[in-house]
Each structure stands twice: as C-alpha cells, then as structure tokens.
Length: 321
Ligand code: AMP
Ligand code: TRP
Image (cartoon, rainbow, N blue to C red):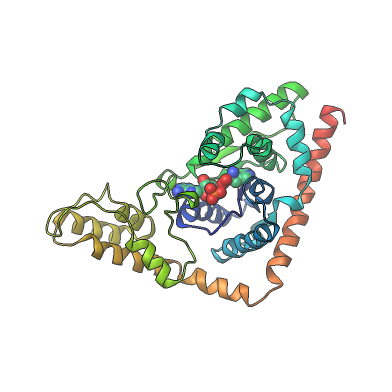
C-alpha cells in the first residue's frame, strides 16, 4: 500500500501534529508492504508565508523534526512538495473539472479568511493542490487529523469527476484518522493549533515545555474534591502518552480527590519530557551531520518524481495533452 501525507512548514511542530498525523504516519511504516511518501507542503505554505528565508528555514526544520520523531527513510520517501513541480500541472488539470461550488463549501478556507488571512486565489484553490498531492502518487491511504477530513472527501470527489470525464485514471484514496487523536486539545481546551497560540511544542526547551504544560487551563475544583478526568485536558493529554496502567492510576487519583491540578500537570510534564527524550537525542545527532537532511530530501525527491512522472503520463494521455 502507498501511504501519503503532507505537513505545512508554517511553524514549530506541536503534540497535536505529532499525535494527529506524525505518530500514525510513522507507525504505518512498520508494515513491510507499505511504502510511505511524506512531504513538506511548501507550495501550500506560500498561502501564509511571504518571507523566503522563513519558508526555507521552516522547511528544513520540519524535515529535521519529522526525522527526529522516528521517520524511517528506508521505508519510503521524505521530500519537499516543490521538488515535484508536476503536482502544479495536475492541480491545474483537476481545477478544470472541479465545480467552484465544491471549493466554496470548504470550511478551512472560511476559517482562515475569518482569522484574517488574505483571501487569495491560492488559498481558495488550496484543496485542488492538495488533491493533486495525493492523486499524483496513486496513494491508497492518507493519515491526517480530523481537520483534514473534508479535504480528503474533496480529493475523492475530484478524482471521481476526473474519471467520469476522461475514463478511469486516478485512484481514490482513503483517509486514515485515529479516533483517539483526531482532535488533540490545546492548553486552553480548544483544538491545539499554532494559530491559536495554545500549543505544547514537541522540541521546546525544558523550561518552555514546563511553562506550556503548567499553563493548561483548569476549573476551580478544590484540591480535596474529586475531579472529572474525562473533561480535563491534563488527563486527556496524559492518557495519549502514558501506558494503560499509568492512565488508570491517574484516573483513580482524579476521582479520589486530595490531589490538585498542579500535581497532575507536573506528572504530565514529566511524562512528555520522558516520552520525547529519544527524539531529542536523535535530533541532536541529525543536527551534527549537516549533509544528512539534504541527502534524505534528494533521495526522496527522486523516488517521488518516478511515480509522479508515471501518473502524469497517464493523465496527460487521458485528457489529450
Ligand atoms: P497543520 O499544522 O495544521 O498543517 O497540521 C498538520 C497535521 O497535523 C494535519 O494532518 C492535521 O490534521 C494534524 N493536526 C494539527 N493539529 C491537530 C490537533 N490539534 N489534533 C489532531 N491533529 C492535528
Ligand atoms: N493541508 C494539510 C495541512 O494543513 C497539508 C497537506 C497538503 C496534506 N497536502 C497534503 C496532507 C496531502 C495530506 C495529504 O495539514
């Protein structure tokens, strides 16, 4: 099976990215018959970043962090979206069979404009480029968080429309969304997101990560009183990283009363710090070898181009180019 996913290099990766997309994506590499194509969506990031230095630096950083989190380079390809420029050609072709009304239904476009992003044509047609990203590799499965579900449905609609118009040609992908981690809450209890400033960052310095965890918003239940684990962001996050036994232990402590939220936050911080320890180590190793990332990206681009060229040959023939 070919697995594909992308991540925008728009900032620092947080544990919502990690649990919603990266961890499932990395786990899918364990099956020997899977080939994983993971890319850095730098064309997409142009809808929000207009500083070339920032884009370049962020792209490298995402590659570094993804590798540090355990991406296995021998089980697939890690590459930059822009190293496969054919994807913009496919996006154009798809746009000619995409009803404008389909794009007008996209909630992420409306959300982004509501948050103040410029309503550019690129932002509006973002889902068409995303569909091209997926379809150009004949992808079977796309691990993403829930916020990308609609984009996946739109991708299938576009592929179907293309196939109806030009005969069979594009493979319909399936989304792969882990229910337990489909929407990871941020420190204010809303969806964790860079743009809400409510993140816990995977590779934050110890002091910074502690500060982020200690800022989790809680209710005013007294220390002695029993607390509801299900509605607590602290408990939810803890359960996503701790073992079953550890989670049960914290649940009991919540329900028993006698422990304050501050204590639970300290436990959560300790768990997170321990969990990401091997990744921080690996990250330091990669940083010590400056050519490593370039070599990985180059190899990834070569492999991705092979597949993209084959699919584009098929597509061009189908439409008469
Ligand atoms: P973004 O940083 O918004 O480009 O997201 C990159 C990937 O992480 C996408 O697959 C998102 O669905 C996923 N993701 C981002 N934030 C969260 C979250 N709070 N919970 C679950 N998944 C998330
Ligand atoms: N839109 C995705 C996000 O913001 C990133 C992305 C671009 C993507 N192309 C993709 C994800 C293709 C999966 C498949 O997170």
